Length: 402
Length: 137
Image 1 (spheres, chains in turn red, brown):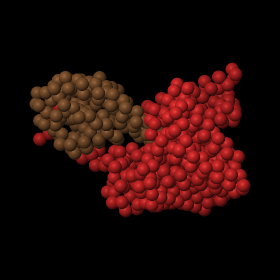
Image 2 (cartoon, helix red, strand yellow):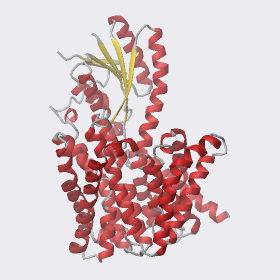
Image 3 (cartoon, helix red, strand yellow):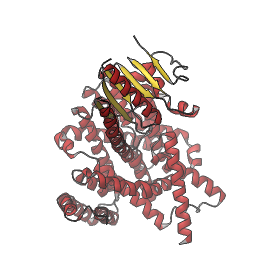
Image 4 (cartoon, chains in turn purple, brown):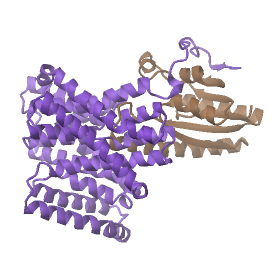
C-alpha cells in the first residue's frame, strides 16, 4: 500500500496545484488539471521515467472513469425538464443543428484536410461537437435571458446537443449486436422506472448520515456503466441520460447535488483530467501546429454556421447573438471525454489525441477571449482612455457626474 | 438622492462601503439597494460554473441577511440582489436600469498583478457609470 499511498499523494498534490492555478488565472479547474497533467508527465517522465505517474494502474483508471461518469451525471442533472417539455420541437431543432454542424464539419475537415481515417474523423467530429450548458446558462443569466423563450430554448438545446454527442459516442463505435439490444432495452427500462422509484426511496430511507442517496446513485451508475461496457459502448452515455431523467427529482435536491460535487471535484475528476492531460504529447503538438489550428477553426466556423442564424432567428440582438454563439463553442468536459474514449479504444493515436485535446482546450479559450474582448455588451467597450490616476490615494473618492 | 446602490463582495472595504452607504441613505432618506456579483471563470466549464453560481448565491444570501438586519437597525430598507457576470459591467448596467443616482463600492486589488489580471472593478465603474460613484478605501 505504501506505493499506492505515495502515488495518491503525488496525484492529489498535482490536483491541488491545478486548483490553485485555476483560482489564480480564473480558468476552469478541468482545464488547469489537463495542463498540469501534461506538464507533470513531461517533467516527471523526463526525470524519473515515463511510468512514474502510473496512469495505467487499475485503481487510477477506476477513479478517473468514475470521475467522468459522475461529472456526466451531474451535467445531465442540471437540466430543467419543464423547459425541455414546453419547447421540445424548437429545442430539438436548435440542439440537433448545433450538434450536426460541427460534427459533420469537423469530421469532414479531419478526413479531407488532415487525411485521418474515417473512424478517427468521426471521433474528431464528436469530440468537437459539444457545447457547455452551464457556460451558456451563465451568459443567459447575465443578459437576463434565462426567463425568455429564446433563453430557455437555447439552454435546453444545449442539452440536446450534448445528448446527441454522448449517443454518438456511445453507439457509433460499438458493434451492433445482441448485447447492444440488451443494453438499450435494460437502460430504457431503468430510465422509465428510476424517476418513479428514486424519489420515493429517498423519501422513505434518505436524509441520514449514512449517505444512502449517494450509494443508490452510484449503484445505478456503476450498474448501467457495466452494462454499457459489456455492450462495447461507453459508460458516460447512460450516466448523462440518467442525470437528465432524474433532473426533476434528484437534480432539485441541492444538498445532495452538492455532496456529489464534493466527491466528484474533491477526489475523482482530478484523476480523470490529470490522466487525460498526461497522454498529451507536446512534441506531437509542436510538430503539427497547422493541424491544431485547422481543427479549432473547423469547430468555431461550423458552430457559427449552425448556431448564429438560429440565435438571430430568435431575434437576439447581433452582439448578444454572437456572444451566445461564441460561448456555445466551448465544451471542455464532453470534448475531453470523447477524445480519451477514442484513445483508449484505439480509434485515434497519441498524436491525434494530442491535437484533439489541444483543439478542445483551444475551443474553450479562444471563443471566450474573443467574446469577452469584442462582444461583451456595450458598457465595457472603451468610450475614452481610462483615467489611470483615478481613485488611487484618497480614503474616500467621489467622482460626480453632471 | 433617492436610490443608492451598494456593491458588495464581502471584503473589509465592502464593509466600510456598506457603513458609508447606510449613513448616506439615512441622511438623505434614500432607498438602499445592494448587489453582489457572482463571476464565472473567464474560461469556464460545465458543472463547475453551475456550482460556482449556486455557491455564490448562497454565500451572498447569508451576507445579505446580516446586512439587512444592520440596515434595518439604522432605519434603512435594503433591497439585495445577486447578479451574474463581469462585476463592473453588471454594476453599471444595474445602476442604469434601476434608476440609481449614487453608487458606493469598496476598493480592492492590493497588488499590481491583481490590477493587471482583473482590472480594477472600481476604476471601471467610476469610468463607465452614468451617476455619482463613491469608492471607499
